[in-house]
Image (cartoon, rainbow, N blue to C red; front, side, top):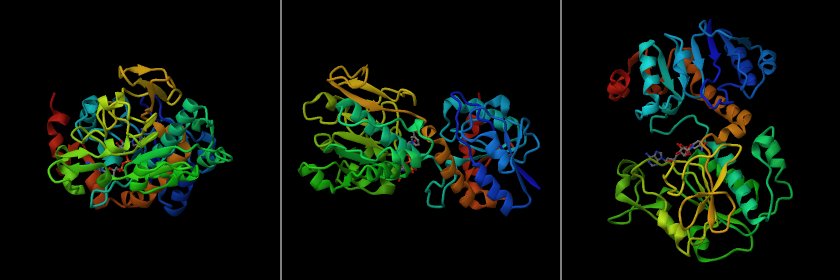
Length: 400
Ligand SMILES: NC(=O)c1ccc[n+]([C@@H]2O[C@H](COP(=O)([O-])OP(=O)(O)OC[C@H]3O[C@@H](n4cnc5c(N)ncnc54)[C@H](O)[C@@H]3O)[C@@H](O)[C@H]2O)c1
């Protein structure tokens, strides 16, 4: 008999998502009779205790009897139970300074850490994440900001809807003006953005048309890696080469800034990857963009005028076009920026269901019978020891 425990999220602000929904727990226990699932009592989880109880999941306080513990965000050090197998987003693989104490505690307590972010197919494609619902919520919020700025339409808040289905119902009768929207990226976030574009009846157009003409209906263009970046020497784009040497590339996005009303940004970004445009461009007369939904959300990152995060309650701020400083939203002379780091928390039940589905499809069955190459590659620490692929974390995990 193996026991999986759904742990209480301890990181502040409290996360309301969970790795398995009640229905998924019930399905798993039916199909794996040797499996028991318990949920640690939590005041914030998006599914109630009663929903779990009805699915046959016991609500518990202590989790030391569990074999496998599933969380979402970083587990507070004092909550880590020694010698257990944990799955959560640890944000340690890039030696993030703020999580060094967590990594040290994990090795000291003889824990096995399997990081969701490291679960990848053999070609490096990530297996699970919350990006799709980040794209959905971020695109909705970006459109909401444009509606508020221009007074042309009104959108409800996502977190006030019970589900994605209910959100879709709020789009009934919605009439979007003739805006031009640039969607950047090709991953999960971008797919979520495209879902909202299509649900709102916004039409996809080709790049050349988008750049050359105006339309009598709202349109969007999707810009992927080869549309966004070119090698500075010969203008080429090769995905693998770009991932390895991003600093050898420059951004092609500036030509779109004169033709775009709303930018929905869903690219992957890290230092070294070119910014989409230069900060100073915002002050120039030809810069048409009025609203940016920066779902990627890196401060001074792919969107250089991302001046930091807002919260779910208050997701939008303005950036003055001349002083490039933060202002209240919706002012003349400023650009509105939607930047929130935990967008999927606005639709936690749908986001959790989607996450759990991927977990059941690609990870849990193998984990219950002892592992798989996918799980092996995502195991950063095994019984307190760094595994081969993560030996580069030695100084981070054991040093001062
Ligand atoms: N604001 C939020 O709440 C929120 C939530 C989830 C994700 N995000 C962010 O959104 C961004 C996109 O996330 P996603 O889920 O779509 O990612 P993804 O992994 O699904 O896709 C990212 C895209 O970037 C490309 N990519 C991957 N590695 C790269 C590299 N080293 N260099 C250049 N390109 C690379 C991939 O080919 C893929 O097309 C990420 O930066 C992520 O941190 C934000």
